Amino acid sequence: MTHPGGLVGGRYRLAERIGAGAMGVVWRAHDERLGRTVALKQLVLPAGLGAAEAAEAVERVMREGRIAARLHHPNAIGVFDVTDHDGTPWLVMEYLASRSLATVLAEYGPLPPRDVAEIGRQLADALAAAHAAGIVHRDIKPGNVLLGDGGVAKLTDFGISRAKDDVTVTQTGVLAGTPAYLAPEVARGADPSQAADVFALGATLYTAVEGQPPFGLHDNPIALLHQVAAGRVIPPRQAGPLTALLMSLLRADPAQRVTMAQARDALAGIAAGQAFAPAPAAFEAETMMDLPVGLYGSGQEEASGQRRRPALLVAAGVALAVLAGLFMLAATTGPPERPRAQAPPTTTADSTTVQTTTTTPPPTTTTPPPTAAELQSAVLEYYALLPKHPETAWTRLGPSMQARGYSSYEDFWDGIDAVQAVPVHADAASMTMRVLLVLRRDDRRPVAEVHDLVLIRSGDALLIESDTKIGATAVPTTTRKRGRG
Image (cartoon, rainbow, N blue to C red; front, top):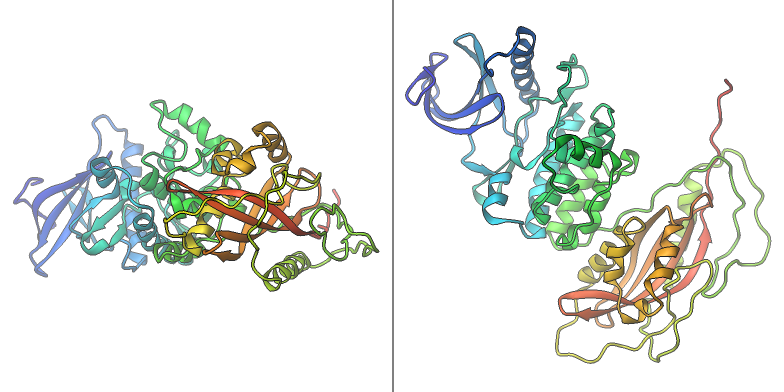
């Protein structure tokens, strides 16, 4: 009997319905044999469902039981057993007094970034364990995140999960996953991977802090799928210290996303008040290019002197070594100095068209200076918006930077394919920041640059008021062997 008081499987006494989905109902129940509270997931087949579809639905429940039973993690709802009742399987699961993240967001609206980071840390820890076990969840969304007492977060519903050794179960015409949280490559027809889980986690956390999914809301799921497939994420506006990490999780190219374990560590740092510093991307090219010796100084476009000869099959570590050398130089030349005098803004042909060498210090105020972590977050949030969203990044610039006009700023970033930013120094007292940038310009070789930034406070926002390039070098790339067809 599927009503309160009914007995399932000869031992589970139903208490109340606590949830429902497209093909299932979840009950709170009492295990009369072991004397504990459990959650029972009842399979409910829609009327008129064909035999093949019904068989797949049953297999989905069994697959969820098998996969979830393999994953033992404090942030994933455990499955204890599968019992048969009236010819259909019921999952016997861990019971958590909780509400879904979707319910919490509907009731309270967006959550504070650091709270979302702590939720994400727990989910990422469970998913990292799942990935290590060869399991891809494939349906991470706010409705599958349970929030319990004491701040605990647990992931549930492994119904469309896949283990690496699992037999594929796919119903024709049915898309596995929720469109608003799908990775672009999955929307284009690729099989869900661990990288797709990373994207879905990012989309879930984005929703928690922004109040809507990263591709917005759309009544037409097909139109939404087209939007997802294009990979055009709406830049976050309320994410604060989460911004840079969210943009990293939501990269359109799955190869450029961080791993789930890296996401977990970054979320733990943000939850603890630390800034997230994305690592420079490793760029590849078809041929090995010349490596200029030395650094380019401020105002110099290219250092003179000999160049090293091209080499074949140079290890990819050479590029990282060059970046490391530039980083070390930046780290050992002392923190940036705040400009003391005003001068007209100047630019160079090979650097950002909105760079200025000096600026007027902001007026003295009784507002306490930001912390170094807040400076880092502001700068990383700014670069996370580029080069795809210059119109939003423009609003993060101060008056001196905006004085040259938006047109030249947009033209510069239109010629950049990718940018990565790594903090070097942050001085809270002077509100200055030194940052290592890796820029890839169209088909040209990547360039690593060190910039000194000065920030000012405008209300609650931190704006970049001055940008001075103090050094640069080209990043060598490797040659890939081509097979002969």
